[in-house]
Length: 91
Length: 151
Image 1 (cartoon, rainbow over the protein chains, first blue to last red):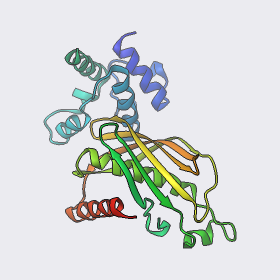
Image 2 (image 1 turned 120 degrees about the horizontal axis):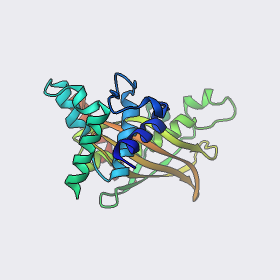
Image 3 (image 1 turned 45 degrees about the vertical axis):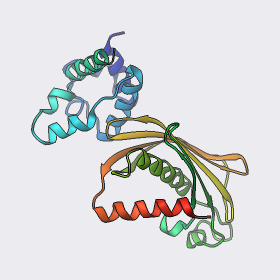
Image 4 (image 1 turned 45 degrees about the horizontal axis):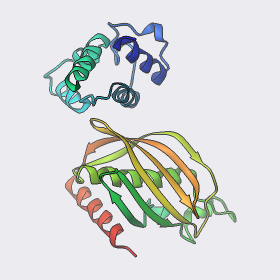
């Protein structure tokens, strides 16, 4: 199963979003409407699934400081790419 | 334990930062204004305060792991079970264990036992935030220090 499929399954189960609505171009906040608490649950599940620690505080800070856009971290295809990078860095 | 002031932990028995476990004790007070309403003539510790007790044990544990630099705030309760009723004078043993340390959040598993029997348990999620002011940080550190020397 691809990283995208694993993450999409986690989001679907955690946030009760129909799996078919989650695409690589979905913005997890703007399109899927995931709130901050659901996002914690998703990050918890992703951390456990992949054995990583998503740097959510850093990402959020960068967005709040205007150093990064939400799309950079929270659009599915970009989020999945970041997860793959974290998994690769762990190996 | 002072229900009206949300002081749920009497004494910290053990903090093991290697195993990421904390154990604490509390005794439910004989009298409390909470019992006047919950329930008249049939005093029971409200379930939300049992959850709060597990949350405080978890929160104190989390603060130990980050040297009291930030404050964990309860954000989620999963698989919460209140397995038995708890009334005045009940001695409680509270245990919390960190299940996951995320970035800006933590997940714990906590339980309360009485007389060796598990009376409540839950998985708790905390968001970890900066203290809103240094006074609160100092106050909480002092309260936790007092919990360690109480007899």
